[in-house]
Image (cartoon, rainbow, N blue to C red; front, top):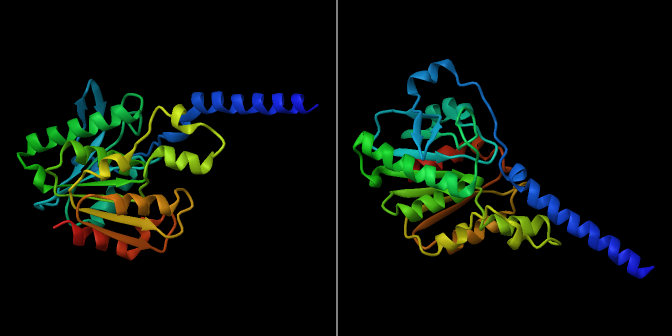
Length: 256
């Protein structure tokens, strides 16, 4: 009887491993599709990098600095142009990941990071501006993108990480402690490994009542950051942190 129960449990466990392996991309990447507002068509900045055409917007306010946004796992940047243009003092570059919005391709960690680095280089070349005028802003999943881009281009002026995490593995271990997560993940986004070596100034915005990512993971990343940092905790949830009045105030103060 005990052997039968053990066999059933093992079969269920093995089945869960197979299911998670097959479905992990669908859990991690949740592309959204928003209709761009007509008034922002004049700001379109669609470019092709690494053989894939990506949809983007350059919100030019004539500022000396530009914030390059890396969105969350369910964000179509088309839905954020209006708010960012109204609240951010700097210029903003928003480009949808592969498979998001009208961008071509299929999302993946290596592909998204490679695209983001190529886009940054192309943008600076086109505008003839130095990396020292660029700030990277990564939200949730995008915090892992911004961290890796900063590691590849440490000349950027600063990094803003919104509701970040140490690694996808750390989050998955918290949610699925009974699975061998480290061996299963194809996309790890190990921000903690890069943070230790980075000297770029960082602003880290945490949500006190984050119901998606453990706030402790974001704190650990902030504490490990190798450069100057400011860690701010706002009394919000994961998805409404940008609605807090101090959210854009903190960003505008950091981006000089």
